Length: 217
Image (cartoon, rainbow, N blue to C red; front, side, top):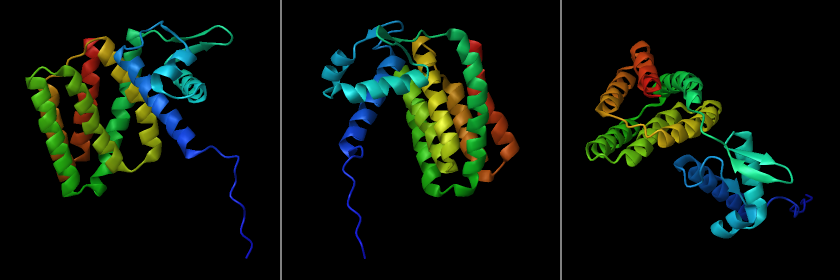
């Protein structure tokens, strides 16, 4: 049997790792305002700050541009995009629908372990709100919904939601949106409705959990 030689001209795992790490960090800095709207980005400075070469930085910036987080002007500069407050009204409806669908699709895959993860996460979420740690509350809320999306086992929905969620997170951070005990109550209701398999009520509650926040903008 002939053994094919291992290709040597492919992207090395370390390069992919550097790109992924750079992308994740840059996106996070844009979301939380470390990199401000309108700020000009220098790939050399970013590479030095992250301890990588300029290649993964450039690749990350190209991906961030395709997602609307930065704007690249060839031969000139790369800038962080502005936060358009009104865009949240376009972001939340599709996100709410896909989150509701994810909850429905997750029902057949529910295990006691998944339910326990949701309960523990919501307890942490409640504690963060009670102690007014609103930054942490936003992150925990996102984790709660990610557990559900992951249980749905649909990579297409997961990919779209990941992009939408990043933009929503940026809106929440920049507009200082504060989540309340009402969200905690809705989470408990979501867990219960998933457990008993009430799809109609689950869809209603999940959508309301997201769409209620449009009134805060």
